[in-house]
Amino acid sequence: MSAYPLKIKQQPNGVFTWSCPIEVEYHRNSMRPGLYACIGIAVFLLIFGGVLSCSYHDWKSFLVVAGSTAVFLLISFLIFGLAFSATDPHESYEMGEDFVKNGYGRSSVYFDFKKVKTIVLGGKYIELWGKTKHMRIYIPEEDFDFVKGYIQGRVPMECVIRFM
Image 1 (tube, rainbow, N blue to C red):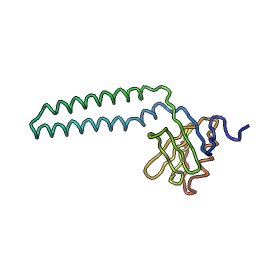
Image 2 (image 1 turned 90 degrees about the vertical axis):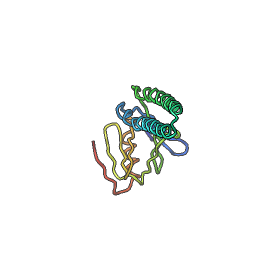
Image 3 (image 1 turned 180 degrees about the vertical axis):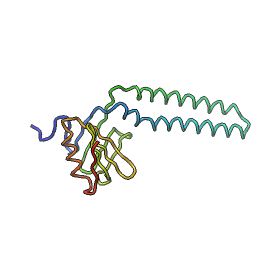
Image 4 (image 1 turned 30 degrees about the horizontal axis):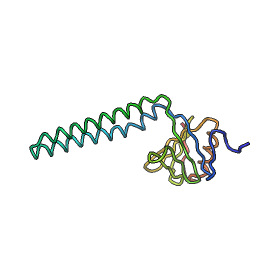
């Protein structure tokens, strides 16, 4: 019998891992900056292409820029449309001695426990707040107390704990 909850698994390297459903609205809100960045890039390309085409009096090259930008936006809207349509989004987590991480590979986000200034305890999640960033960690209900205790034992003593 394991000393730890069943949904959270401890790997041979000591890191705890789990996957958990997250709120749909939180998932959509976390995706919005990426969509806005794509729209901003498209606007920049159109303005920059328009300025160059105007200064060189070559509007045929602007058609190439506009066409490329339209394809870029179409692909972006398709990808983000699929992401926004998710009805049961999940997130994966890793928790070690010094950090918690959500996501996979390049899209993963680390939060060092020593940089935590405030912990917000919600019903299904824990939010870690630092000076400039924050992370929401969704936890299986039966494992909530374990993760809460694990994190609280590793954050700075002056950390503020709030309840939702």
